[in-house]
Length: 458
Image (cartoon, rainbow, N blue to C red; front, side, top):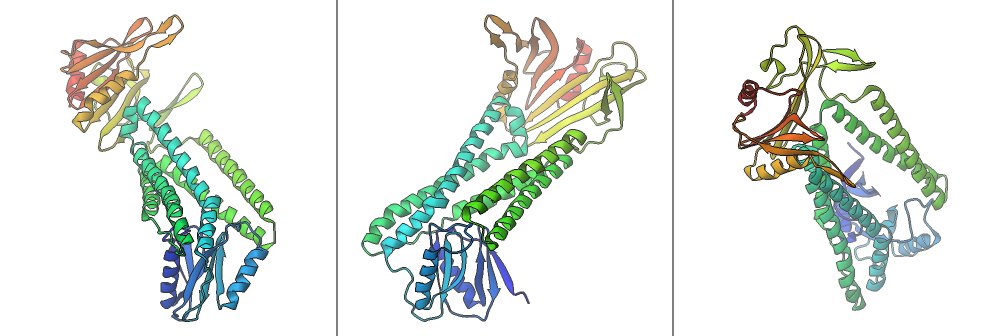
């Protein structure tokens, strides 16, 4: 039979009422709280007992303290006189139990109790929530910029598209938590002056938001191509390892009596060093070996001192559909395929490697399927906006699409790329629910355009 049991933390650290009720309930079932942390409550097996359990706060305490301060020891001695036994402490929290039927409370002054909790909040809780709030705002601005500048890639990539609602959820959770703290203090302070203590009530929203965020991150990671998925999981394992090692160092320093400042400095320094070391190792590995994107090359070739891989992947349109290629070697690639419930985006290219008749050219195209009709015009405009003229002083660098006759393409609209002082054979073709950007590297004939329509329109 197990002698210990763990539970995920079920409330905020300042919700002493919820903690006390949970710890008393577990004691009546034969499990006494033994350790607490940011993530877990650990219990040890006992004989089922009806205990009074109270949670108190000591704002000046820290996880890095080598032991309880003199004031903490004095408080524990006073509590012991009334039958309160210290069960565990973690940072600012101390947990006591009492076997008496009607014990004298450790804290009897509501004003002092409210001030103590508020000081504990201001020291650790509120600053940490403000930091996470700032991170959420930064991520929303960063991802909003990516959405604005590269809408098609963003809306067709699951882990990118889910990032905005994810960060919005966390932002709302943090705002909600901060409002809860300040609202409680505003109400609890006058109530305490009238002799009434108002306990803080846990808001489940932030717990739900954090758990959902972790699940979304894990789900998106598992959807990545094999190489990127492996890299992401390794990096998660690295972060977890850093946290575990840092906590072990902190505990070791505490056991050896290191001062609070020494423990804090060395622990933070270790985290920084390990982060840079692991990041450097992973970066060096990627630069040397690359990241496997799940595709398997069939061969390779060298050109101008560089080695290139050859692929033979299925494509909806091949160069050989458009012209005679003879006995030649090609690399056929689907470079990227991303899909969400809004869009799917696939990139294809066929590169001539060697052999065949003169005049063989490469071919590349991107197919975007819009699954929700109301997004069509927005996506179309975003793809047109990817090409923008640049103005530098009196000089204009031409780079934009201009409309052309869409009849040959059997499309609702068609555009051709104007770049510098040339008109390139790059086209943006708009069919129903599908937009294709295609680059020929040659001037396509009407017959070739008809084949493109037949292969790509549907």
